[in-house]
Structure formats: C-alpha cells, structure tokens
Amino acid sequence: MTSLPDAPLTEEQYLRIEREAEFKSEFHDGRMYAMSGGSLNHALLSARIGALLYHQVPARCRVFDPGLRIKVASTGLCTYADCTVICGELQYFGDQKDGILSPLLIVEVLSPSTEGYDRGKKFELYRTIESFREYLLVHQDRRHVEHYSKQDYGSWILREHSGVDGSIAIERLGVQILLADLYSSALNMG
Image (cartoon, rainbow, N blue to C red; front, side, top):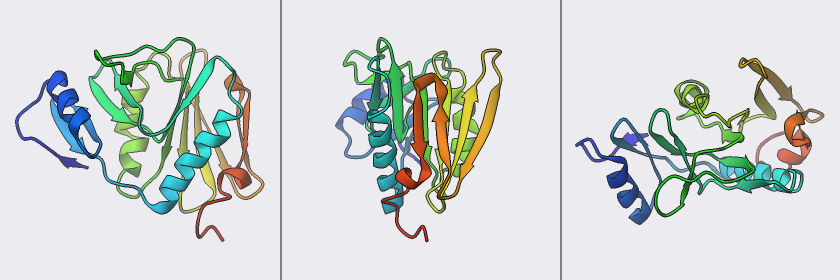
C-alpha cells in the first residue's frame, strides 16, 4: 500500500477525500494508504465467498461486498475487507452512514502484497472490535482457507481447510462452505 497525502489528516478529512476518490484508501494514524487492485482470482474469490455466505447466513445477518468501509473504533483504522457479515443492528460511523463498526465475520482474500498485513497488524487491529468473532483468510493460489474463530473465553482458534474435499463450518452462523464450491470459478487451480 502506498501512503497518500503527506500531512497527517483528521478522520473527517480522510472521509471527505475518500468519498470523492476513484480508488479506495485505508486510513490509520492520520495517514491514507492507497489500496492496490486485486488479481482476477482475488475478485472471483471475493465475489464467490460473498454469494455462498449470502445464501446461508441467518435472516438477522447481512453480507457486504468489498465496498463497505469498516472502522476499528479503538484504533481509528478505516479499511475495507473482501467480504463482511454483520448480524443484528448496524452500528454506523460518520454522518453519511457509509461505514460500520460492528462486523461479526471478516473475509480477506490473500494477496502477495498484503498477506503479511492481513495476517498480522490488520488482524491484531480487527481483534479489538467487540462484535468481531470470525476471520477467514482465503488463499488465491491454492484451495486453502484459514479460519480463526473467537472462543467464549477470548482466545482465537485456528482451523485450516484444504483441498477439493475440504469444507468450512462457521457454527455461530450455521454456515457450511465447500471448498469445491468456493474455488469453482477460480483460475489455475489444477
């Protein structure tokens, strides 16, 4: 990600710039960072996971595409995920209700340029969101998904799912995703 304006910005300045921009940027510690475009597989997998979730989540939940801005209130991070599920009442930030504070599930499709950030600092910041309980890291170069799930006592458990016969169960949402379905439209998967 590339840093944009040099001077530290306020959140209000970031939101004004972001709402008029032709590309998405992340905001943290007074700085805007341009988000790079994804590969074809990245776009396909992002759309596919959203479609599979849409048909399975409970009625009280909503599935959002990568256009939804997420704010991590405790740190000021404003960012976008590849797919987000919110259950219950939406908690907005900003006067235009174009950003949310309360994701339950966040999905990131891993890219070579952002994989370390998605696994590390970004996940660390996401974990400060009170409502956040499920995190999926979807690999785009092979059939493999890492599923982090927050336990009642606060720690996170990792389950890894691989191969054509693998599946992901998100019990708190009553969701079951077959990797064969998720990766059915991906390119160069062998």
